[in-house]
Length: 119
Length: 213
Ligand SMILES: Nc1nc2c(ncn2[C@@H]2O[C@H](COP(=O)(O)OP(=O)(O)OP(=O)(O)O)[C@@H](O)[C@H]2O)c(=O)[nH]1
Ligand SMILES: [Mg+2]
Image 1 (tube, each protein chain N blue to C red):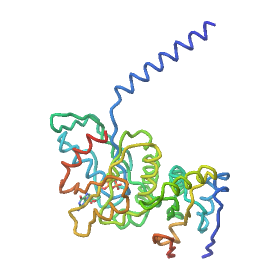
Image 2 (image 1 turned 120 degrees about the vertical axis):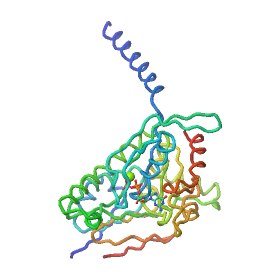
Image 3 (image 1 turned 45 degrees about the vertical axis):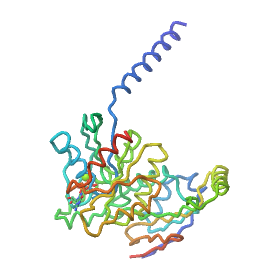
Image 4 (image 1 turned 90 degrees about the vertical axis):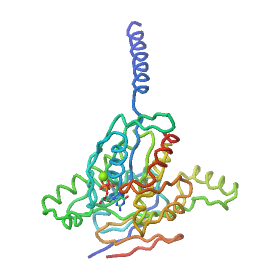
């Protein structure tokens, strides 16, 4: 099987929408995005996935790292910096990995990275 | 001139009716979570305890609930205070629909295909209904790894909408369950450990409902 990996700049996702991504996902393509998706984008992605499910496409595996998630030790300054950056770029710092569930067994989330297990 | 007046009147009437309806509208308590976590079992426990009848069917096969189930006028009482709301049991949210699960559950291929189709519609319906909820119980199976994208997506969407959330760590009657794992995965949320099936610790849940609704 011919599996491809596509790197998607978050900015492109915003322009072309999630439908394009599903087109790729249905063709054995794994997608990496250089940001954490916002909650409404994740919800939209799940909705679009559901609309596309068939006997040939059982859905997606999806996981992400959120590099802006704050923990107790963060200074107030760091939190403010994160928020200003997010406001200016319109982008949540992080990574997203999405793949067709028919070729990916699971995505393992170590605290600091994502590990893709193929079928 | 006259049309402008009429339009104005029309708008005022609409806003008045809107407020009237809102006041009469019942508070909706949504039960959300991944498939098979025990949402319908908990909905049944709540409805049984306070109404004497069940709401949903439950099953060990995922995607048993494929349409929203609502029970209105559930009234719970605690320390002389009363709380009236609707219980909204939702289809489990997933990023994939495992056709094989239905076959393993004993369905024939055409039935399994139909079931999968219904399941996809159920997931979409659950997501669409998020906006209508006044408060949500996110029910998680405490025997499973809580750090899962579906859980994160559900919680993120509720937070973005400003909807109050309680996380329910369910199935605590099972040996391999861990409420602690859920608490450390989502430290910013209140987590209540229960067994919806064995009706353990539901009293604490009912008390907490007075705080979030
Ligand atoms: N041991 C144990 N099993 C439970 C508990 N709650 C639910 N279950 C079982 O878990 C399975 C799924 O329960 P449901 O209530 O149907 O789950 P659901 O979240 O409504 O699932 P969907 O409708 O498919 O999204 C059933 O076999 C239940 O009997 C619990 O507290 N303890
Ligand atoms: Mg159910």
